[in-house]
Image (tube, rainbow, N blue to C red; front, side, top):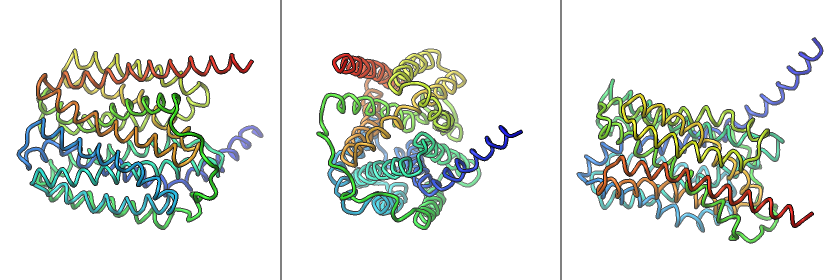
Length: 397
């Protein structure tokens, strides 16, 4: 009885700490919801602008360019405004951009809007991961994977909303944009009033960072780059793949994002527990191998059931990679985190247009095999880091 009481008493402070992270979690959810909202309607956006798959690839590439440009902008914002203000300002900007993206029918204007969407998403990504890392330090609790799980939940919620609006209301993008804007405004308002104004330390409170560019950070960046190629491609092309390759209806097509996002959410709920038991690089090596193998098998078998299963397993395994890398980078400082966020955002945005280019010439299935290849690259990169760690440890003996 005493042991049970002690266990219960230890759970209460933990739950209280996790509850205090809800304002940060709402921003993770908002980012996922924002991306998932336009990603789940890419087929309709393509039709509205009357563009080809290759042009859709350039459309998505515009966000990659925005993410690259965001690197110095994000560092400046974090150093001068802090993570809280940066996340809120860019969150509002992204919310205002979304209805414009949904209602736009001009391809050139769409490219400009997606460029600014890339800037906003990359900046939000860096700032909310900084908030999450600071929260871990302040409360002495690992929660980064859980926060990333909420991001995946936001993606899944966006896909569900998309399916519901199409099925029960209308497939017109204007109705979808109204509902999406309402959800995003609510999440940002909650974060505004709930975030601790002193949650993120100022630049003067942070220690001077080590050299940002070295072989280890480049390998880490490669892992994040490939992981977000997988995440971004699954988010942006899974609905198109189900619609155009598997042959599902318009209302079922967003289920690809839904299955993948729910699996990501579940995986990240338990990822922190796994990280306490096994080294991060070992988990990343295994995850990359599973992504490559399972997705390749699912694409080869084809069919709706096989596709759902492969998407789900990919979501479960890839879910632990980005939180582990971002937590490591955030501990170094805002510059390192911004560098990883740039790698990540670029990967997430470069992957989808590359698939578009490949799909135009070789078919969408071939493009999805490129996603599977990214898993192999992750495995090899993680093995390289493990070997470098072992070499360093031997030299220090």
